[in-house]
Length: 72
Image 1 (cartoon, rainbow, N blue to C red):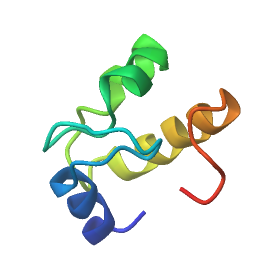
Image 2: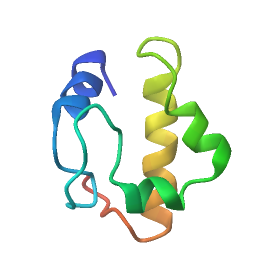
Image 3: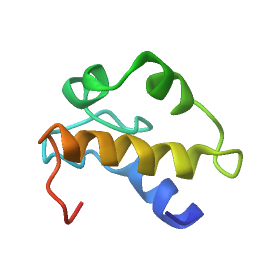
Image 4: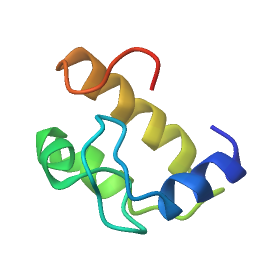
């Protein structure tokens, strides 16, 4: 995930699962709640300080749980 992609995600009102989400949040409430506490905490890192990698790890978790399709 590039810095531009991370910023676009923050500006989006659509979660990777297709549900609506709040601006400046990584995921919708339902997806976020399915992540481990450590993954939730990691998503509050700043861009360029590990956020992109943490976001990709969270996406992989959500794919494994069936919340997000492979293309997202």
